[in-house]
Amino acid sequence: MRRAGRADKGRHRLPDELLEVIEGMALRRPPPHAAEVYRASVKIAAEQGWKAPSHTVVREVIAGLDRGLLALAHHDGSVYRDTYELVLRRESGHPNDLWQADHTELDVMVLDLTNLAHRCACRQRDRLLAA
Image (cartoon, rainbow, N blue to C red; front, side, top):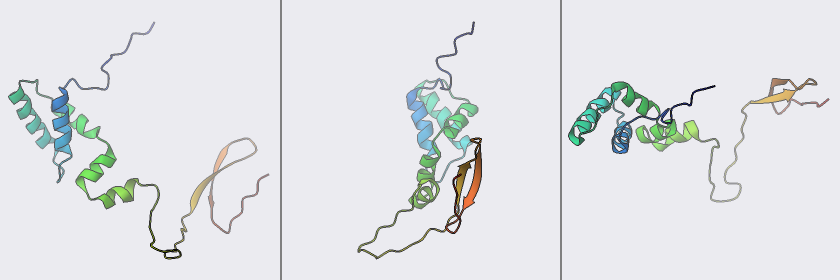
């Protein structure tokens, strides 16, 4: 027989308001050090009569924030766009106003006769023959 796991596994026992304060401070620009966020959260917790979080808990809350959200908060939109958007979008005002070609080599996985996947770098001039 297996013991039941903890219901609060992966969560911190912080008041929701303090958790929001820690996340909000971590999203400021310029990005603060975890120690700064920790000291400020301890001060706020003391003022509100809450139990002070440990430095490890504050670090874990900051590390748990979405990387895309941190990129938007700490940098301009171009950093987020260059890192996280899948498609490069361009708009043109008129037909044939914008021409571009993508010469990026793609990694293509090809299945052999035994259904094992093999990586194949394909270019436009290359041809894949299906057997």
